[in-house]
Image (tube, rainbow, N blue to C red; front, side):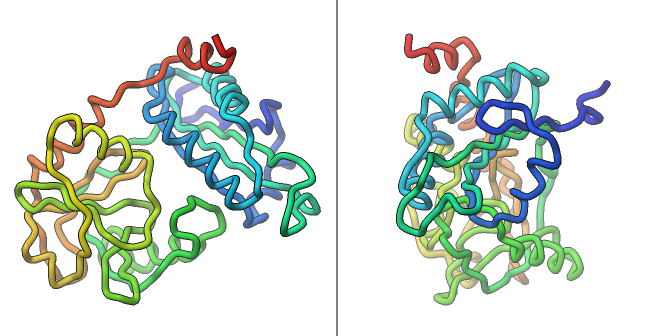
Length: 281
């Protein structure tokens, strides 16, 4: 059976589950998650994923599953699947377990795996939508607006949509972080956004390489001064963006190569290392 035709696998707290058990969670609405790519049974930026899950759980539920248990669930899913795959970890509570102030039990962990993803080839053209995601700093479920804006953008002849906040600042795209290039430095939007794990990996590798980077308020009018733009998420460290609304942007191939170079420099955690972390040895 090819990877593309391989059925998706799912587990809760390390226990395989059926579709009947998983389906209600899709409509729960009060959960958060992280998504990662597994290659050769290795994961990059695992520390960033664990931090995201821990901090979001404390914000949402007031308690978090330990990093050690989370690693064990991730390791079990990687062990059970092909060498290359996509892996999503969702943390949730069942009805009646959350009182609004405290948890009766720890949140539960749903791990799903599927075929590996690379993202579209690009370059991409983005429409512009005035939209601010609620709880933007948390990667949470139940955001139908993002999918609706994506479909609307496609109907308008674009590939995807970028968001501007009520102050006119570009923030992020539907499922992407935005990043820009001024010819000398990497420029990250200053606005309420999700700090992506890919973003975190690229940022620390830019620091290691000595490449200048800064955060700045980016308006549509400011785009004419920039030399490149890209989107990134767990699929890819960079896909060129050549238009945002009616504004054209140069396709900065050297900038895209730099983003990919940063990702390639990020070390990957193997199952052997993950086992040591799980066992505490």
